[in-house]
Amino acid sequence: MAATDIDVKYVAHLARIGLTPDEEVKMSAHLAGILGYIEKLKELDVTGVEPTAHAVPMVNVLRPDVVRPSLAHEAAMSNAPAKANGLFLVPKIVE
Amino acid sequence: MEYEAVIGLETHVQLNTKSKMWCGCANAYGAAPNTQVCPVCLGLPGVLPVPNEEALRKTTLTGYLLNCEIPRFAKFDRKNYFYPDAPKNYQLTQYDKPTTANGFVEFEFQGGLARVRITRAHLEEDVGKSFHFDRNSGVDFNRAGVPLMEIVSEPDITSADMAYEYLNALKDILLYGGVSDCDMEKGMVRCDVNVSVRPVGTQELGAKIEIKNMNSFSGVRRALEYEIPRQIAVVKAGGKLIQSTRRWDDTTGITEEMRTKEHAHDYRYFPEPDMMPLAPTDEWLAEVRKLVVELPLARKQRFIREYSLPAPDAETFKNDVALGNYFEPLAKQSSNPKAVANWVINNLRAKLTELNEREKTEQSELGIEPADLQLTTLADLKFPPAALLELVGLVEAKTISNAAAQQVFAEMFATGKTPAAIVQEKGLAQVSDTGAIEKLCDEAIAASPGPVADYRAGKAAALNALKGYVMKLSKGKANPALAGEILERKLKG
Image (tube, rainbow over all chains, first blue to last red):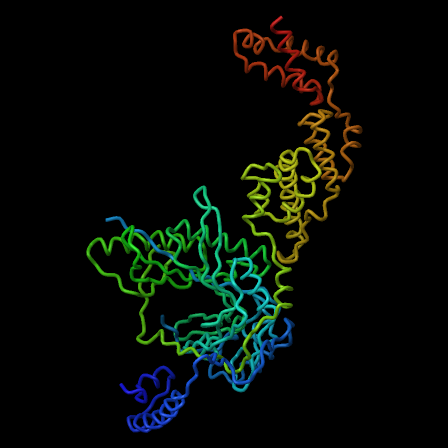
């Protein structure tokens, strides 16, 4: 598999995105374009350059351990497609 | 061929911060479902998580307590997976740059010291709690985003018992450091177990079997007691083990394979773009270093060494930190720390437990909730610690007998009066007046023809009965050693 080939079906499954066969073809081309660009970046010599964890040169942005008000329960639940007993209802989780 | 087990543990511990990991929602157990939630911990679009400094501090402190290195660079990553209890569809964790790495835990095991290496202790977040109904599942996100520390061990554990002791040692250390309340009932400590078997003497690891989500240490031990022989039986019968995940069923006492989904482990980790990396400064680390406490094992060993205590006493003071803290300053001032330890453990602790039980009963009868019970602690005792030293001194100097000392202790515990005052008030000073004791001995001999005959017939133990009689006559005040001597002389003469 060339570096620019990508298993679109597999990646779509990992992201839980349903694609039609047409869309798979289209997405393959788009993603190949992006990966092609990454391939080009690989030509750069980065010997001795530390991998960047973040583009902004800033560290240790932290908050003090202070409790702040939470959302009102009704507000927190207001977008839930289904709810009962104060819980968000979801399709039954099978392990 | 003989086989051995190779075990590594991943232990998840909730940190006892006030607020959650990325937001200001309370980190508190037991609230009504979905009342400690906000846009950040519900994973609503557009929010920005900000790490809780205290959680980072507690993780770093744990690193020091577990003899880890603290790298000068760490970061958070997204672990992508879909599950209803993970509201963001990813868990924030530390993938390749954890906050601590390469440590070890030492603990007592089978009469010696065992050492288990620690791969890393990193910081991540807990997920919501699921409830299962007939047709649906329900999710409470109060727990989502609670700071969770994962402590990963190297596969240095070789038996179910060793895993159990390792977990207990780890829990003791976390409690000493004050980083977690480690309440198992509340699910504050959970464990994934990785276990494989291999022929003794070989180095290559067998297929790794993971037992997920154990919530008790005894469960881990029982699961391993089942799983290790199971794996050995499979390979001995010529079968082949494959890497898989199993679930422990505590009721039936067996492990069973979980349905494994294809590609389930492709988490596509990547650096969390919404958070800045961590680079602890010298000053910050120096502040955390100040929080380092003496480890439980070191404390036990020191108590044995410095106060000549037997191991079980030192173990008691290791497990009951408050009691040990009460004991130690007294031991330093006493010429007989062992006697002080006996009083603290056998008398003081027993009396306090008894009092606390009474308080619990009385207060629950008044309708007070278990969480609001007001129980007497070592800090509220009626007598000052020095009074206990005085009491030990009175026994040492033979001013009072052991039996009388018990009475004095009960009285000072109840009233707070000084031992000297109680001895005087109750006339408990030991009688070492030979004349007075001689008289009591004569009485005892006259009143106990049976034991006297026994003693003369060669039963040395019969002397104890006579000695007891003398003590009774003296109301516990006679010097027992002296009474014994006099009785012996009289009976032989």
